[in-house]
Image 1 (spheres, helix red, strand yellow):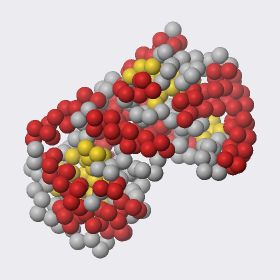
Image 2 (cartoon, rainbow, N blue to C red):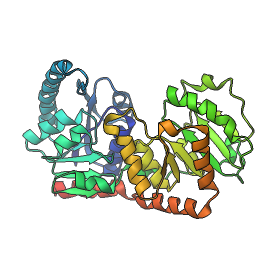
Image 3 (spheres, rainbow, N blue to C red):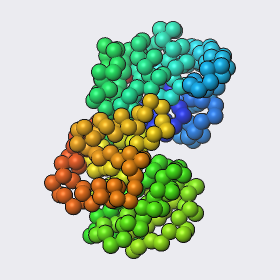
Image 4 (tube, one colour):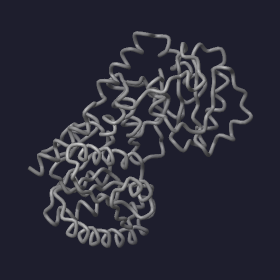
Length: 358
């Protein structure tokens, strides 16, 4: 199989793309890949290190605040479209797979105009602008969450889950004990994105003293840029502050409750594990998609939402206590989360790719 895979901008797009590549390789080791991303985002460093041939195209997203600046956006889009056509013709793939980010729009549009088979994958509950546009002509649309199916008018929309889920299931657990924690006590992990957040750092500093004398342990992952902000915070014995966890997924497997943002990757991770969650959607994202991700989980009983405005000592700690002290509610949330995790997501996507190619 010859595949062009297109995704860029954030880990929420890039890592599902890698999971799809890995699943194809697992089934068809002789497959050839070309990854098309941007010239200036994180995929340009991640993908070549994996030994996957990479081409970067210069694109920028729409400026929704200043429409005049979009003249330059369209110029770059047109050039990216023409460059994509050249790369596609040269590689001559069996299929072109778009996994999100604005880089997908020129590349899959080029593939469609040249008559190549296309498949797109949507990670969020609410489709991004690029995927909305691409769905009109894509041969197959794969979605991560059940409610997304009805938001696409494409005839061939398939609920596959997020391909990251399948990889996470096989990850080994890192025990509480290995982190210097008490294995007999419950563990709450609080993380506001891999980079952390200035707004949430201020709120967390006020929150931490409220955990004193609780019968559970708390690990706060600050983000590397914010660890120094916690120097003046007095910690009780049951609270630990760390800048980053390299083996975060492994740690999650021995975590009892997570408090986190509601990005697509996070949703895939917690549902793959079946981890009860209190989700704090970022209000600073396009179309408020993190809230919609969290709302879909909450409606199905798989999480509790606490908004950023509500993220105060009383509200959050009250919600944590409520969950950890109510075994029935906790187990129901765990079960609901596990039901949403698609254990064979990457396999399902591979099956759809195979159907397209024939």
